[in-house]
Length: 607
Ligand code: AGP
Image 1 (cartoon, rainbow, N blue to C red):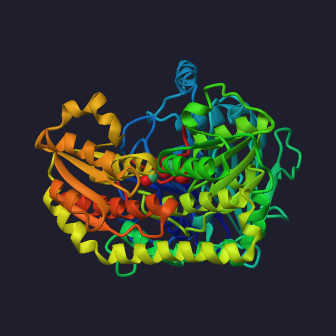
Image 2: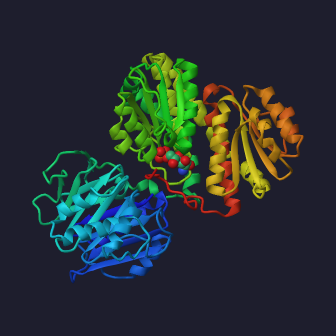
């Protein structure tokens, strides 16, 4: 969602902030802006809808001398996408950027308007600006005005404020991601919503807790200070060295990040198993499997939720531990039954998804052990959980998750292996390594057949709707396949349990409806019957199923035969690679913005 970057230091702050914003582009946004103090001590503000490039064009070829700057990429929530609603928002000597939602914005807005404040934008963010300006006008200091303004807003937010009068940047947040960074050698201090924006710039990162005031100032002995709500210094933050690099944001020879990330999967699988079976990850994996709960509450959103469905199957099949898998946005408000002898498992690429974080907090409050399967080391989810298993997918830029799904599901399988204590045995680990390597090898082979998938995509991309169907372990990937197509090709697609279609949705089948049938070796005959039902109603059948199956081939308008041998429980992950490529090529034929689909954000930090 919205991205925040701020900088204070002797180097040119505007260029540094623009570089940080560029790195956050992958998260999805619809406008961008910066505010800085120029060499004449004037507070400047530039903002523009559309890509960061538009903002850069607006800024022109200036030789900035700014020593302090805040910037923002906005993903609209309150108020349409236009220049005025873009951040920063400015009044007098104050400019602010905001990430999150002020839930009581309309009430506050009415009160502030009644007392004479003139709003320029339709945003909830400007409400905080007006509160701050009002508190400052009462003669309060910057710190106190921040705290008192913050006390009036409800919901999860991060605010970063530049105050020209005192040459300082101050920030406060609740339930929204925020990280500060310093580079002592260059006397620079940074702030951002995402540590990736600071890669290679800050040497040390500080993750403040909720309701901690972060104070960035060049006039203090320390460039960065943290205060509690009473204004006393606090140590309510976590620090770590910055070890991220910026390298992987290069698309290389690939047309899109999504395609590059699909291609990365075999290598990532190899390195995941090497790390957890032979390398330094084994210890953490064994530790994660030590506690055998009476039940797992698996909670996540979107693609991560579908990975959770696969993980549920692994744990229930191999560990016989009951699992409930729930969407975090539902779980958090459902008053779920939670017991101390149970465990909760949160799956997330970003580790910043608001609903998943809230679900995690709920479990912690109810004394249920929390474990994450997460990509971003040091993310909020990572920091808040009792235990974590990193999926080691590297940075995922494409908004449509591909490699993270694969790594999440496989890391879930590793967890289930650890729960059954199989990993303590070296011989077993070697055998398992072979199985995962086989998966990687087979995915390599699938990818080498991309042209065949592209040809199918070319033939079907203009049809009005798609049903992805699967049974048993292939049902979660039917859901995931449909989601992938929806988000990047903007066509209606639904994932359905193949046996369920005749209970309603079959009414929609006609000659313009495509059925992408995911068929595995299990429940083979039954799935074939389900395809027959669609075929009989003139639906177009695209089958991804076991190779050399004549019956299947005859039944299908398009048949993509694949080799499941030796993959067993890992086969849904395998078949899903075809889903990814099919969605990618359909979207390509439709000419959509594949890496940054409309209306979507990479990291969903509002509920
Ligand atoms: C996946 O393609 C989506 N963009 C989305 O469903 C995503 O998986 C979901 O928002 C959860 O994100 P997370 O993994 O960062 O928690």
